[in-house]
Length: 405
Ligand SMILES: [Zn+2]
Image 1 (cartoon, rainbow, N blue to C red):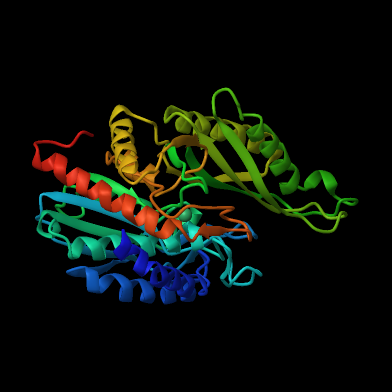
Image 2: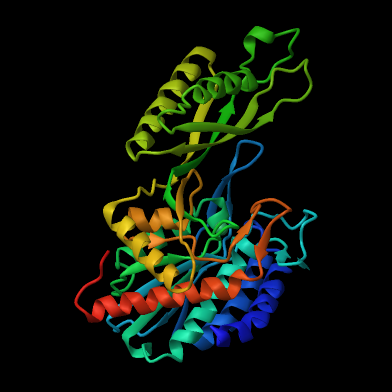
């Protein structure tokens, strides 16, 4: 621990350097710059480095067209794939902050490191590098192999990296049989981890009607905005608090002058589900609503998008892993707690592909996705130590016969 304390300052400095570079999910140049930093940080710690091409990313434009955006690759660092204990570390280089927003730089404020991505999750990835640095100098080195996968598109739902994460988790990308996944999203400020997670999908609807003059030929027009208003109202009504299902209409774009029947409209929405079966239910309902509205209004309505994060339930094996981590925490004087959340992350993708994981092993922090985001400075060494004890404990169990989870 004292050796870690000595490195704390360097960890924080590295985090600041990374966070001072904007890497909003759609800022390709910024992400590439951050990736260069990650390469410099991780390549010396790993035997092998490769980039997996992703994309292009399909995006429905504000004009209801579909465009293709280039995406940065996924970075994969690997060492000792033949070692008996294999660990999959995952994280992301993108943030939710676009390059033209006001929140771009880090500053310290008592025990807080404030800035974009300090907690979510550049701080967490710096912590991973510290864990690997320890591992490479530890007596366990030859017994523990690792893969680190860093995605560029997590904050937009991992549309392109999701399938690669699933392949990694299922061991179909290479032959590493991972014992667990370790993802470095932040823990809450008080150290609480995310337990069960809901599933999520991002969708758009494009509406294409017919534009006419609202006075001279109103009834010959096909009003795209009115059609979207109707379907969004019906979709929103599918939300069911008791069932843990929600449909959030996030954006509607369309129309202009009030004396013109608008021919184009786009709506974007997010769906959260508690149970896997609710995904198909929602898709069936959306299909029914769109077909009926299209038949009634003559406006062409099309659904885009998909569920990219299946729910992550607290299964028996997941619970066993959490309990194991709780024991590790006790050794460090930490009381590890976890709580179900409606949020989701790469841990959902890994779990759906059959790899149990803990996905909030990063720094403690709060207010992520807002300009009040911060990471707690004293959590850098604390959470590095927690990961180290977890690896030591997994290794000990494996040596004694089998993993408890
Ligand atoms: Zn994140």
